[in-house]
Image (tube, rainbow, N blue to C red; front, side):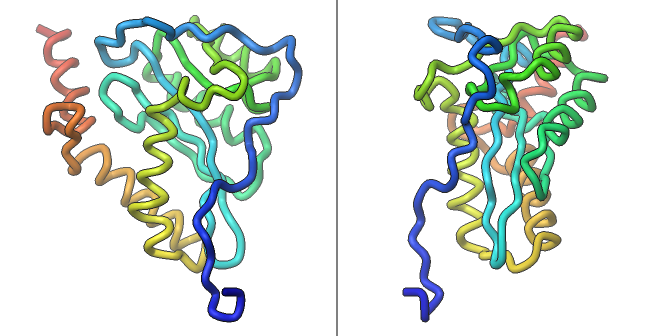
Length: 197
């Protein structure tokens, strides 16, 4: 397999190691009815492999519309790329709750301070409970199996362009069965029209 450059598909590095237990917050979404845009955002980080390495992708997903609200790619796992993306999006749009796992990017004072300063409730998955953030995990699986693994990007630049294209198609063009055949952007637009009326 090594000689032929054949690789097995399997889960990669565990990115969910928590930093300090005192920063962990309870899971707020159990039995919660999610019925509007910007009620709950799910956030997470995954790695995306290319020919000679990998990039890290941080995404923010609106759980009602399935829209990728914002995202950022990074060459390293420094927490600043997560905070930069959150600061950028919180300038013009805010959820009631943000849900994450208990990884070190989310169990630290800088992250908690940022959300508290923006009056966002903090929810965290139970330890080892990947299904608590199922919508975000489902997006990562779709991205990897529909794009990353098939296209086998060679350079980071190619991968960045590919991810940008995939997210545009996911948000604006691809219909979602769970949204009655609408796109995430169309669902957000419908809700804004209703609120404005």
